[in-house]
Image 1 (cartoon, rainbow, N blue to C red):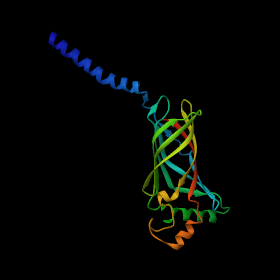
Image 2: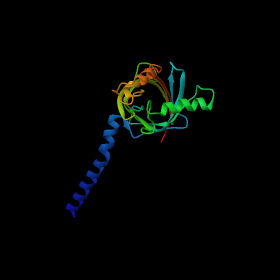
Image 3: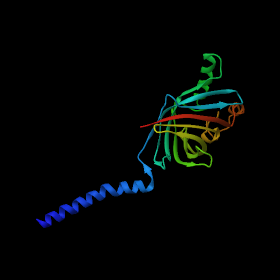
Image 4: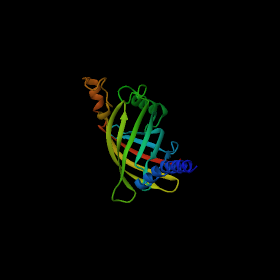
Length: 211
């Protein structure tokens, strides 16, 4: 009987250790199992093409902020709906459609083949200024993945996080050009490329809610 009690006590201690020590390690590292979900109805990505005076927005399929440490997120994932790309500068619906069709074409974002772009946030570090963070991660457009960094203003309350950011992307890094192939020579494509800015200004307005 005593041996049975010893075995039972040992099992209880082992089970307690299995439950307790992972929790202790999580608390020690300061990580919390918290996820904030992107509100896709309130969030947008805005873009500009100053040289030809076009501008517009793109919507998101989904997004999350996670892996909280010291009450701030350190990771994130985003899925961008390239089919939602819309221009807003032309005064007529026909004019806007013409711009939109061009942006979705093979000469630019090839949306029929690449309907989704993604952003994988690998690090979010606080800067000296309040509510300012340095974000780094990988942006994938047209099947091409490149590392990017930018600064965001992020504010948080108990159930909501809002984030805004301004940056530029170099379109050639993701083969956003008028060339049929990145290395081919096409005189008409080159001429069209000269009418488009090499740097595309992008701004983000994001709203997250606690899951």
